[in-house]
Amino acid sequence: MSTQEETSFETPAAAEPLDTAHPLDAAQGPDPVLWVGLTLSEAEGLYGWLMKPANDGSTALDDPIVSKAVAKMREATDPVRTALKVRRDLQEAGLVSDHLSDDQLRELAQKLAQSATPSLAA
Image (cartoon, rainbow, N blue to C red; front, side):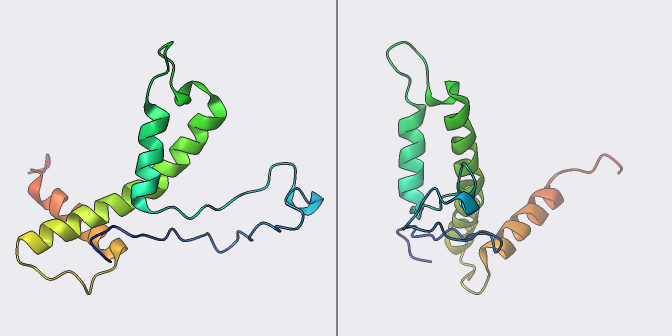
């Protein structure tokens, strides 16, 4: 992964790309699913812009549809951001992490956090 944080989000296997000839085809249902390829920087920039309060103090989260979309975007970006941070921290500590997948990095971070937290059972 490059230091520019270029990231691709994987489409779930069951999801089919939208037919661009007929985006509202009846087979897609009334509300077809769209997949938008954003870099992590683009997704975080969009999130930041959506969270800026309007003149009346409202934010995009006040709209239930936008709020749901923002939540999905955060679900996609949070694990990527976590893996990037763990990879960067390991590299700063002099440990090679290039051979580890993002999932393996998140699992390692979770195990380290658990081992650093005192157990209540002890």
